[in-house]
Length: 549
Image (cartoon, rainbow, N blue to C red; front, side, top):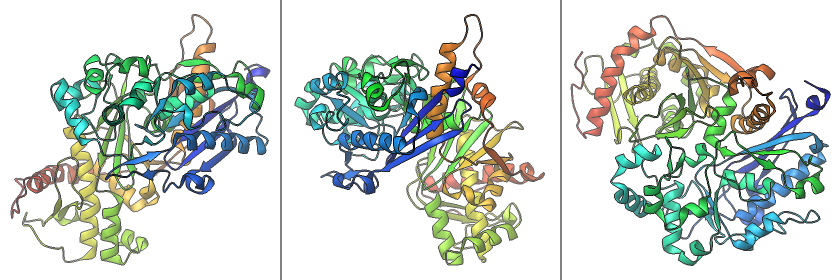
């Protein structure tokens, strides 16, 4: 690495629901500086709660795009105040909350291309830059009608899954665009370009509307994930003349161009600083985890989410298959489970008065397999299977109203949740074997007793990340990798993304627990019992025997 390369830095952004965060990494990918802007507290004039505004109608949520523009002004100034040397930034990339959309006016595109470095961004890219000033984000679930119309137009939900990797979801961008086309026809007509939150981030730095990348574009119900271009059938089902508004989709590894003159003059960015395509927060988190195809990421939050890399796209009626953010010929899968931490917290409150230490002691005091006592807790309508309610069975396969000890209740809950996650994943075509490793993230990943249960049920070692900002780190890592690929001498073969990043920085993972030797023999028979219980619940039956051994 030459002296110039040693000085090179990489800038990553994460525009999430509640904040915009920036991180500056050195050439060896160490953190040099970071800054953040919290929308609720730093930008109170926009009156957001949790980074969004509720709309006038049920299930509507929006953001004023100018808030995000103003946040960029503030976060860059905060980096400068930390004496971050932006003249060393060789490449920039970003991560954005998925599914949200922005609608540029002609004037907005022209302003973007002619920014005045003596003025703030928000003084130029103001409300007049957008034809829709209250733009929908992923929390909006008001497009059930549009989902039905789009699926019907292309021949049903299965056809939509086959093309785009997901059935129509209310939060996805395609149905949201269709709603704007139907309800704000003039605004749609006047929209010169439509950006996702991620491509909007790239556009600010590029000084032009940036292309949508394949990975974030997979969350729109518009992209053919196999062909990596817009599906004409899906575009036609959504709105007229949509392709010209979306532009050509790009690979996530694309260098879109040099940073605009505005940033060179105002913040001393080098004139040859590269802007790399930005992607969605889930794909960016996968890029930041630095794990390969043998790994399964388990996020333990309000909803529990499984995330994994896939060699080939699977057709999932529920869940999502997206184009992979770093391995361009591969895919990633997301499976969401609605009954996650809130159910765990509810049982903890009932059984231990909310004492997590006691909860863990009781969980650990009960043997693996729980003497054959099992439970399914679907307090909210679960996604897979579509079922709601609670069912408990004892070792004789009889349903019981309640187990006779808190420790039995607690182990039945945690084992039941993890058996559910594994059963669904296997039924969806995933295979777990000796090579499988698990990365636990999210709020409950601090709970070693729960992690041990995950290790045992999946029969795989469980790790946690010592660096928590995976989507943000993923953005900066991808900037570094795109530049490495461009600078590679002719005739040389590029390292794959993970190998390249790990050649510069260690994997910030910590092994927390390994499965017990008898895990497979205990939990394999329980998986089938669990499937039968969930099936009985989905069928609305109350049964005394739901299992055949």
